[in-house]
Length: 405
Image 1 (tube, rainbow, N blue to C red):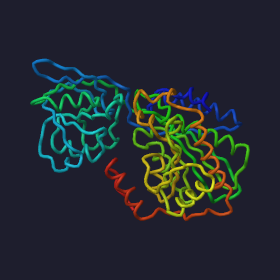
Image 2 (cartoon, rainbow, N blue to C red):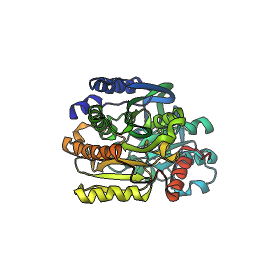
Image 3 (spheres, rainbow, N blue to C red):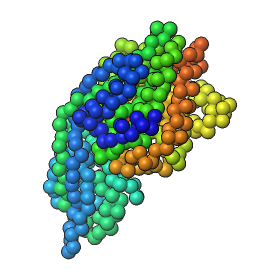
Image 4 (spheres, helix red, strand yellow):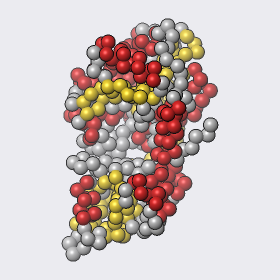
């Protein structure tokens, strides 16, 4: 398991040659099990990690490294800088400043930046964390045009905000292009033709990051599950999906749901693996589905002493496009101290522990075996109303996607 993780823990942004390379590696592993996977392609707007600087102007110019926000274009702009709290953005007045924001820019944030006439924006990362590369939602620039943005360190952000009459110059360069991303799919037939379970993990990473915990770990865990079911035929059909371009806005799972829309009614459950191998962490099950499913998993957890933290909520990963269609999901993840390094260059194999990796893989396998071979599903195929509202809000505010139902 760890040997394969080492092979795929390299930067692999959706729609790039590097992402295709990881799918080649995964496909070779699958062929070694005697199975021929299927590769489905889809187009994405993508980019290569660029470079940039932010200068705090004054009697003495201070220069800070800045990572261009993917899909926000290139720039050389100078303007006053100020911080706006995300919750106050909808009420902000016209302002041609460079706006500092916390950590990320969602569709709703970007819409208001455009409305107030912001000249640019800077995302300030968590204290002590190496700045990574954020990305605009695909719809943001397409619908509103481009406002240049960059990611800076917490220390840089603090220096800028602390300066009297802060004025900054932001310079960014990056290569943006249309690319082809992919989903790698394997179907294991069962005996019940009309019942399917999707088991998935995303194969891409953010720019600059080896993506070991997020989510090379999930990929090798999923390979372990696939190897088991390749040798042990299940009662239900299993669809294994290694999704591309999750970090660009869940694009792989969204493409799968759209392409296979006529098949969705026969999908009873999604088991999603995203984040794993954290040395100082804990295993979690986030249930985007009915309470009876969360209770079932919690009961299993207590009976077996698994130490699994169970909750019922949405989870920002490839389960969401399925949940939007009313399909419940169990998201299995391991997070802790090293997970805070996600989406940065620090998410490498040195922070992954094989024992921790296998602990979640074992939980995932045991649960998948139970669900695949159960006489009947021990829960309804439904999404509760309160979770449904959270799903709608998630897609509306983060991606600008309104519910069409």
